[in-house]
Image (cartoon, rainbow, N blue to C red; front, side, top):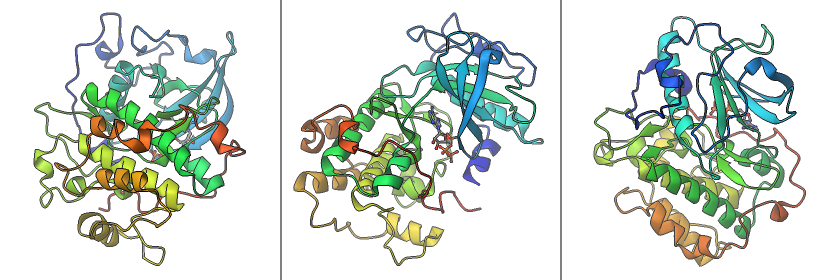
Length: 356
Ligand SMILES: Nc1ncnc2c1ncn2[C@@H]1O[C@H](COP(=O)(O)OP(=O)(O)OP(=O)(O)O)[C@@H](O)[C@H]1O
């Protein structure tokens, strides 16, 4: 539902001027049938896919609210990519296209080892007519799936792994926030892991550029990971917020989830509904963390889950926090042991969407 709502709004982004070599922003006819790229990535990324018809489907990697992600192989180079195929509903085509264009604009500009790379955006029907879509993103293939997949297998992670995860995500947010990009949907299924065990941030479907004069709706993203000022803007002065603090809140929820092995802001016996989430996120007392958590981890999580966004830790502050400065490796690979096979047992909190 929130994905639908996201498509129903015509949000606009104020972004830096496009690179001279980039065709994308000048190409408005998204419904045309073309197999040439609408967009390449920035000049520092080598653009390796120039015709989507050179990609052959290998497997389905997963389904999201907007479409399907395939593992694909480039026929000539044998390089493997993830192909995200978005579908637009009839009747909402224009608004959905605008949302997808915004996502593509952001993806085109980001180039960081902490962010899943996008190698091209195409507007054609691909692979075969049954599975064709309306807009396709050729993405870096992340072999080990998502943090959600890892949690499905391991249930909980040791603190030393969580600190590596935290550091990587903070580095990614530091990069994004430096470019004025607010992600707005940090959650386990949007943190992907490659064969080297490196975690990267993915999915910019509801991201925005902050500090512009544009009006942004704040109640978008995934409810369960949403900060108080985004959940209840009026009470928590969300109107004054630039949005960066909301990403930090989500990091705190994700890391705590890795520690306790379940969504942490709802007690096991509590019903997962919108009202309970609202109460727990916006009104509950400071959370009591498990005894077994180290003082560093507790303090880190509390700095992230500070309800008042103005008092919450910033990305710069948290990158200097002892919990993430002492982490032993830039990769989670060795620490995760046998958790390389994916599983689909666990899902994110089912009330992941904003209720109508
Ligand atoms: N670049 C990638 N490499 C490998 N697997 C991927 C990649 N991108 C996505 N996936 C897999 O495909 C699944 C679906 O991704 P998608 O971004 O469409 O939706 P989602 O993030 O799971 O859900 P939502 O649409 O609610 O955000 C992911 O959960 C992940 O397992």
